[in-house]
Image (cartoon, rainbow, N blue to C red; front, side, top):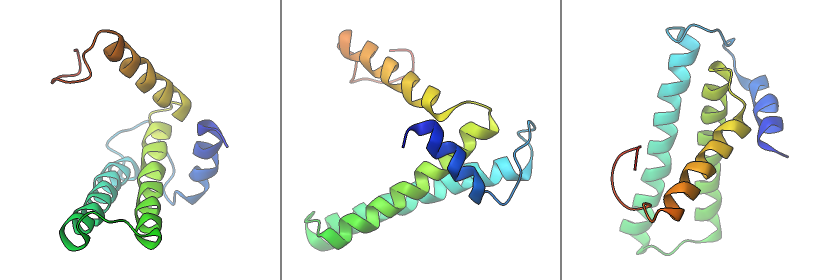
Length: 113
């Protein structure tokens, strides 16, 4: 499945309807959901480091992958609210990273490096 197919299929599970108003509760809920899921992912990784000395079992990996899937759903939903295909988000990110790679600027700070 490609990114745009995923985004379209994922929209089925959005209980709010996308609008073009970023003050819409549906959009705000997606942004807060993304932060929450990213936090849950980070928490699972933290516990692997703290409690298991960084050793990842198949069960641990499955739990992290599920959290990453939830994070992806929120990213796809936010892009949909912005009327941006998820493939455009992915392509733009790779282009940015490739540019930084070519200029030896992967390290550092700021969006405009």
